[in-house]
Length: 325
Image (tube, rainbow, N blue to C red; front, top):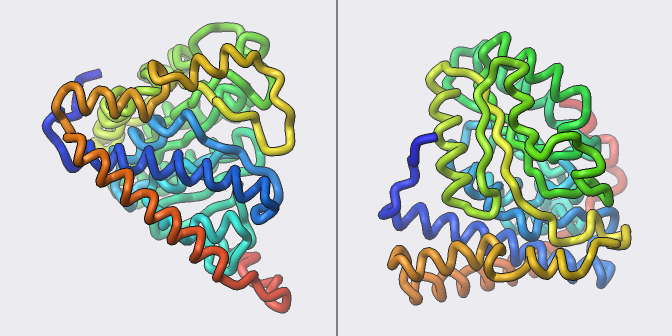
């Protein structure tokens, strides 16, 4: 696909760097708070995959739709949902996006086009199809990006939805984050081919594979697909090759090899360090730009944690509210 990321667009580069760093630091704080008992339930950290969410969501407008899955914190923040209310939701507070009722996997904000995470593997795939159908039915130029994993790519629902998306020419980008592990199952034990995106050939859909640890490559690829969808060209299937460096969730032991994890955590592959090095070495951002961004992110995270801790828990007397749309 054609390169659509202006190398001289400094505001865009700064936004992408800040958002990737925000997601990373948010997840690191969530991990600490979880171990301290301030966050309960299951958590599925997005560390290592920040470039996918940020590269994709920076190609969208506020009124465009996004659906997510288990590992939704990164998508939530990349769609520009407030950091304070995201942290409050993680901590089960009434000031959270879902009024403290959703927690880690059920963030939601219709005003920002974020249609939520999902506790069902592949649960967002058909929701995204509905959102894209709605946009076309209402004759808007909105698009929908559906994030799902390589594990979810083996669910039957993706094939049903790709067929309908192609048949009806729906404005949707199915974005498979191939992070190599479905819970504890490595991709080579669950998937019969190295690449997942070519499955789109069966549905007469264009597809692309991008480096999911390179935010600029993700942004170029998704931008082209968004332009195509917005101008009536229909659905695109994208596979972003990345890696989940944390265990599947906070309560499942990680049996992967330490050398493998360290390799993906290293500076050569880490998406934030790769971007930082590229931006610095190519003169796209100055050392001061990077330092100022890092300082701003730290302040924002401190304020978010304080806000969440000071916020009340939901009142049990109102437990039946918000059950219906």
